[in-house]
Amino acid sequence: MAESSSDEKTEAPSQKRREDARKEGQVAFSKEVSSCALLGGFLLLLYFSGNIMLQAYKDVLIYAFTNLDWPQFTIPNLQNFLDVFLTKGAVIVAPFFGVSIVVGVLSSVIQVGVNLTLKPLIPKFEKISPLKGIGRLFSKQAFNELVKTIFKMCIIGYIGYYTYVENIEQMVALINTNPQSLATNAASIIAIFIFRLFLALLVMAVFDYMFQRWDLEQKLKMSKQEMKEELKQSEGDPALKARIRQIQQQLSQARMMQEVPGADVVISNPTHFAIALQYDREAMRAPRVIAKGADYIALRIIEIAGENDIIVYRNPPVARGMYFQVEIGDEVPEDFYKAVAEILAFVYKTKKKLKK
Image 1 (tube, rainbow, N blue to C red):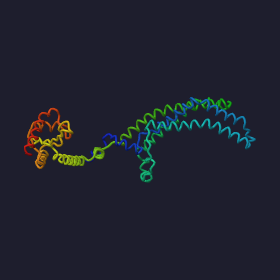
Image 2 (cartoon, rainbow, N blue to C red; image 1 turned 180 degrees about the horizontal axis):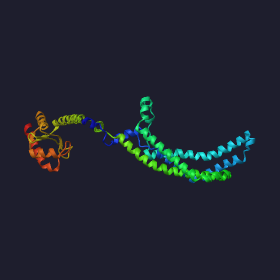
Image 3 (spheres, rainbow, N blue to C red; image 1 turned 30 degrees about the horizontal axis):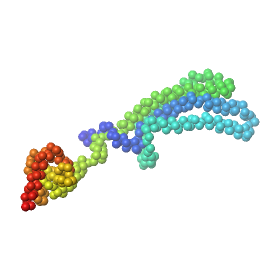
């Protein structure tokens, strides 16, 4: 039971897991938002440029109904019609094409930001495997997409049917109208249909985007074991880190011990603490601590001092105070000036006596 509970994905995804998923192309992306944004872009296009496109549409209809003699249809007539159709058709189609590109890019950037990755395009065996393909057909995601598609088609059908019934009389009357009136009224009915469809898709897009974010969050959830493994990978194995710290301390101590033979005096506790001081009157403003240690390290410093004929001066208060207040490489603080000066004076006098 304990093992199964540890494998249960109950933990919120870490920042690293989110970033890795983003690199793999796993982001909260709603196709409904893109569809709704595209319809919204078309509506804005019709609002600001509708008159220009409508006039081009009218020109095509007028030319088709007035300049083409269908019973005596000839190649020159066809060429003229194609020239008009392509010229005016570009005025109608090109803006929609441009809006589709701009809105498609913007809707993606707004939803997921700038995420340049080619990993989703890399072929994977599970994507071409027939068994995996059958599994995806009956997956939860496929079912959700099927439900959304059916619901969307029902909405489109209902809006289309409602718009048709609402404008049936006007549409029948257009049969006997001139091309200009036909184009104007047809464009108006289409605009109403698109606007209603936009409102319906807007509601769907909001809920679908919220669902996509929730679904992605569920997929990225982690088990407690995965959290531990990621912590080890990001911060390192605690045992390995402890071993590295131990090695670093050993190397630091070894370098420190190499400095002890250059000390002028070692102040001891006598066995619990040891402080090695070095002082050069011409180069230093105050004596400097070149080594310090407690317990075993203190004994080792005292031992090295004895091997190198360095005087070991016993002063427990000074040794204890400097051990806790002064770091290796620092100068002696002013609080210890008087005590250290007396110790160094004793050391220099002792050395002079030994030389005599």
